[in-house]
Image 1 (cartoon, helix red, strand yellow):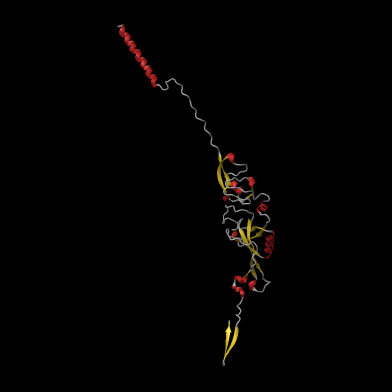
Image 2: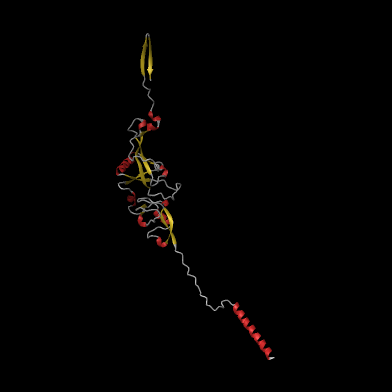
Length: 286
């Protein structure tokens, strides 16, 4: 009897031990080893970037800047030089029409010390090339090419005079001549650059045009304004280079209209009497 009780007790202990072992095997991490905790690296904030205005092409000194002279380049904030221009309408407005004071290569930034703006003192004098002068003439919708002349264009100046009272020949009373050729326009009214934002429909016709001339040419223009009407003729941007001095030829009214030449005089004739034997004959040569 005692032997049976001992066997039963041994079986119960064995079963309990096996159950405990099985439960421990089913629990994770029962190997007794400590698992190391790995922490993720802290998130790095992205570097702030801006779009900076740089030269779209090599720009030479004396250039009057336009919108298409620039392009945008994305850079970090610390890469923007002091006085640099970033993306925005205010920056483009600030640079539009400004005079470049030094050579700038393509993709290089433009800073405030590189330009002279129209509102700056001495801007017009800086626009003029060495040895030249600025002179303004009055224009209207006809003499100013319908208001389509822009700073930077080259024009010829035609003087038209009415000589009535000083010449009795009708065909010689009105005369026109080109007094200057290939003269550069540096301002229209008070605008020194073509902004590109203006439209022809909304643009007011100019009343004055400022030209870049030599001292001698300035004197000729001043006298011409007292003699008659000056018209501006726009030259082709890719025209053949011509002499910048005045042309000696004059165009009179009779050169334009045959009605001013007067009645045609009879052509001179030559008569000859031919005598052959007893006959005579007159021959007329025209």
